[in-house]
Length: 499
Image 1 (tube, helix red, strand yellow):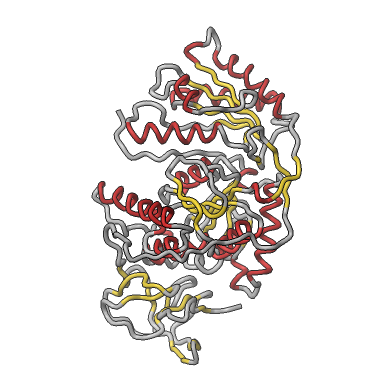
Image 2 (tube, rainbow, N blue to C red):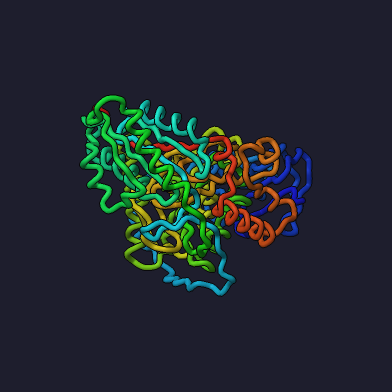
């Protein structure tokens, strides 16, 4: 097992894989460096003297500048490094590489999924109850609880309600965003039956929302307005849901190509290992799915692209996508600036404790989840996937909001890397991939796959093969840990006022 790693030949820091003690001699590039301080696992050690104001280089790129002189062999963390990020940029000097990736030759993988009438394929066959407004959350819970008590969800993959706080007292983009996310759920293929429950007097008027949804499968989706129900609205909703349940439990999985998979890429609770193990694994998977199977992946967390955005821009398939990516970045920076917030204040206390010092460092690790594939789509928040291959999606870094946005875009599952651990799951299977083996051992009820073995002498090819096999198993019905725990949540992006 390695004790330390220099990620890129241009780097002037290395990362400790295991805790290193003061006085330890490490050999890098034929040079012996004696550590002058202890270095925690996942954290950085200076490979040379770095003068105050000079950049720290990791992944081959600057991750910020040091605030004081740093001696060779010293420990570097967030107290020593400051971000170089500022406001918006024009990116006028960015040139796309013009990469056009053709589908590589490889055996076509398949999974067992649920084919829907609109051509989409679900990896689950669940029953969902979606409120148009938070006022009916209690009614939704009663309906869901009653049907679960009656049926035990036998014959389906689960019966769930999705409470939220919105649908009324919202204006402008906030109101539209709520409608878009709920509409996207109505069209999501992981549900075999959906009951939309409205109140009747909310801003998100049920009849208007139904029109907003456009064409939908009326055998799979039903609407109920509580204020229009004579008598017991719970019993009325339950009666509708029973019919949806009876229809859904008769549906069967069929064999479909892996090209039908749409996979969200997310990280949360990142640490110093994220950009070395789990995120590169997702990048390799994304390249495999998009490049050899004709599938689709989606990368989001726009603020966590800041500092690494030019890498993505250069991989855009054409100038139109480049301009959309520039807007994606600068619009999100303007969102920060409009609230009087700096664009570089991102790493959380957990990130810092795990070895991440600046947003640039976090972004250079985060964007590795996208692999090396060309960017074929750029999506606004609430927009659904319309291009195969790698897509970029506008959403914040917040775990709950970003994961919900990925699922709403049409992703049937979210691959979620983490160095600190989290039990969260959005409304599609949310697979936790640990960056280090210690986390996987401590939290077996949270972690689904351990990528930490990549620094324990397992090759990327070996780990990727196991990971692909596991993803296919999950797509074919194997539950991930958040599903086993009954965790299914949504969170909708909010920016403006509440009336």
